Length: 195
Image (cartoon, rainbow, N blue to C red; front, top):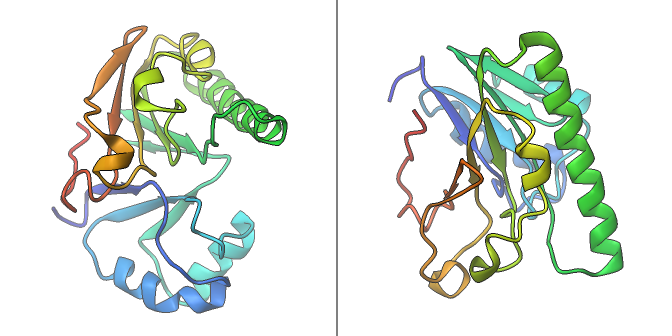
């Protein structure tokens, strides 16, 4: 890996509760090779507005880190975007947040399509998996949105930890889109090459 590479980290970077308490974690990330894009995980309580987080990066000279939050990035001939996602369990409060996350995803995909058409492949990252349980992976509430875009071929997600959580899950395809679990322990803390 070198400094020209792009590394996407799909959440859970720091146990800090406040942004100002994450310096040690960001210094560690800053010193790793490549440009890093961070996506919010469920343990990232320090996560803040994009303006505040980018100001924090600038103030501390963390110049090879940025955030995926209601935005997208062009890298080589690909477009990278993503969402936090949410727990899928049918509870009313969770359904409300899930609707919000689906709306955010759709808005980003519409903005990308407006700018680029369908000429560039879009790669999606999510913190939460797009299903409730691995055995229900075909019950994907994002599939209808993703299926509208012929240039989406891959979705990567994290969050699941431990054999009990991800069980015997394998990479799978749904409606022509590849889904891949990239949780750190699932990958044995190795890097997953995206393309």
